[in-house]
Image (tube, rainbow, N blue to C red; front, top):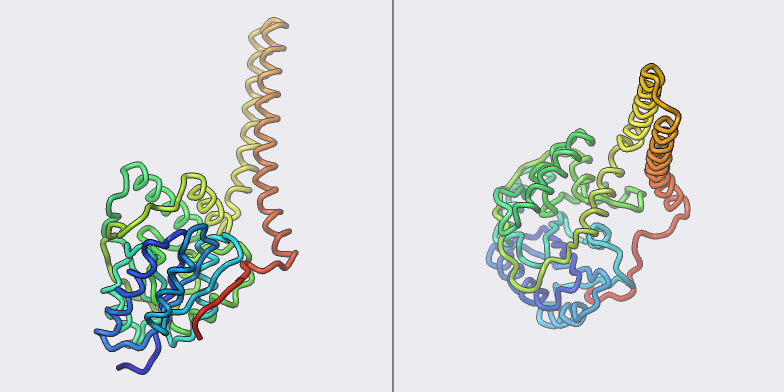
Length: 306
């Protein structure tokens, strides 16, 4: 048995049907490879029997630990809670639905033992996702990679991190965390392991379109002020277009009625766009305000395991 401990952080939201199978599968893989381990399930305010399933998994294997949020705070915050509570010399992060293949963990661990400090699980294939979802994901990661200056086009939450990387991430003070982006931002010596996204073993995806949109906004605004800059540039262009169009209307002798209609339409468009720009700026101000309040990222209301 290798004496250096691997912590495996597994966020779970409404995953009562998968927790015990995931715990058994991951533990079996690591035992077969002779790797000392702890499994940390983080219940992200689930509304089903996820916490009870974590307790049952702990009864079967004392190396299974559980952290339970007081309410739903989001997957990325659950990941950070697990990393903050991890005791291992290194820590892996993976999904509870086994779409991240546990059999790759020994290979990732071996790469870490060879000196790599961040071992990235990169997607070779996105599994059974719809064409629309693939297109949206590809577009999102192309945008965030360009804005942040980091290559995240095949990024996933499936990673293994050295202790110093875990401690670095845990020290970041921001409330709205984007794990994939921050894991890319910190640098360190990196290696990649390709994997194909497996089918879910049970249940359904918890990602609604609204949740994905919110996730995308958090990701972009965590790494770039481009939306505010775009609002400024587009506002200037809007004003220039209105000015040029007005001059042209005046030059061709547009009648008074047509002129008034034009001014009304342009005025409404200008007010609408100004409100959009104000909303963009307000979102950034709101992030600063929330950070200034000093509230915790999450609240842990229950724990199991030592």
